[in-house]
Image 1: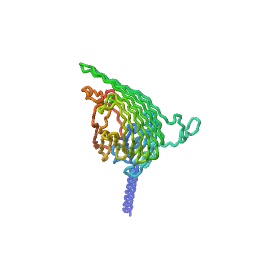
Image 2 (image 1 turned 135 degrees about the horizontal axis):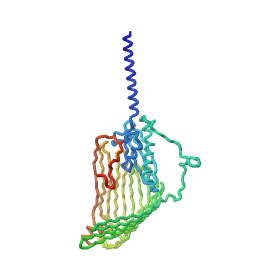
Image 3 (image 1 turned 120 degrees about the vertical axis):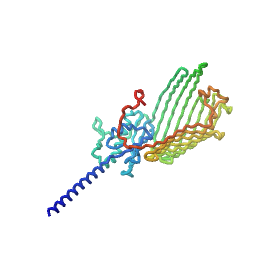
Image 4 (image 1 turned 180 degrees about the vertical axis):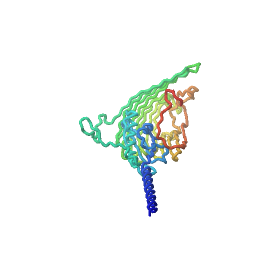
Length: 433
């Protein structure tokens, strides 16, 4: 009997220890730290600040291994500020959970204000995931509205009357100067713009001027090259619905480099977006067609024996922009030709691709090729050797392109929580690069 009691006592002890072990394991598994992948490919994020302000999660650099993939994108607003979109994609144990947040940042916001607001919305979006990871006790939530000095709550949902009627004005000037014993370069530019953007109408005006002066000392002679340009542009676009837009552009232009004494153009057109414009942060696929008419007057007689001419033409363009979990793509193509002679045309492409092929392998490509067959403004006569070497005037070319690409494979630790700014290179050059 005593032997049986001892056996039962040992069995009971084993059961208690096993239950305690299983309970501990369950608690540990329920409090597994959230693994977060921050994707700021479309915009800049101060990841150092993010990691120091949100330290109850594990930041990793492998999207596939993450519990939450946060895609951060932005679009420019009519007032010059930006609207940010944060999409929280749940992965692995949080699969099929998705949330989206939006917020706006003013144009004049400082870097400190921008990063603090980003962290605030990251905290809001990550809070449900953190709570389900077993760290709810580490969250602090404040749901009280701010109180003004009169003791009344701020009524942020009330519409505000704008004394500027949504018009935004910008003015600026810039310049640079460089020199050595044989070469001097001066450039000065000024600009002014006025823009008004609402959901129904987009209107903009801009004026700019640039002047360049370069001096080359060959030892036997001094060559001075002066060029200037002036530009005025106006745009009006009217929303028809979530897919269609009509509008026009008007421009006035002068450039000594391009032999254009004056160019006036008007281009009405229509644009169709396959996706609703409300999805602009995630996806955009547009088709635009427009007619245009240009009246050109030249400084020198052109290679086609013209001093002035009127050129009716057409423009067709396609643009695609995608910001998704797997990466981002921005690409487009445009075709322009003159009705007077269809052999005068221009086809240009622009492509930027950054795709994560796997959790550790990514591919990027950027390319800007063009086929040029419409340089009707070129001056007649052969270019001198000086014109070629110092780019005194625009030269004939049937094409131009710029291409870059790269592949990155990352292996090793995926954890990326630590912040260590020691011995970072700086502009003063005190540290080694």
